[in-house]
Image (tube, rainbow, N blue to C red; front, top):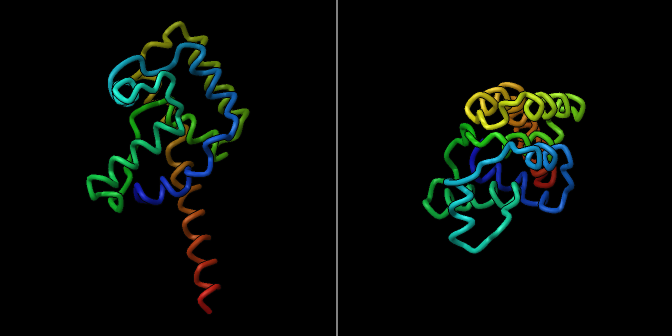
Length: 146
């Protein structure tokens, strides 16, 4: 999947409610500085959403002329978690268990540890969900042409 395909997949998900991700972030698991937080502050965006995060990331790639390169991975755990929830790539029950494990661990600030676990649980399934969407969209387009 490419940056352009990821952007296309998530572009209409701006207003979808993601209560599990919200609880994860409210529980203290969030990026506190740098990366998308720094960019948002530079743009006077006080509370950037994960939707804004993914759209901004993909838009940056588009502006740099690499939107059609492979989107390999997002290192930000709360973004991957949101992507899994909003796409329904991972069951809610499994996301709730993961969220609870992170928040109740007394190690909520160990971002590398939790980013790795979130990636292990969610990333492949997100990719599969987007790939299915891409393949279905291409199939529908092919039917329209015939």
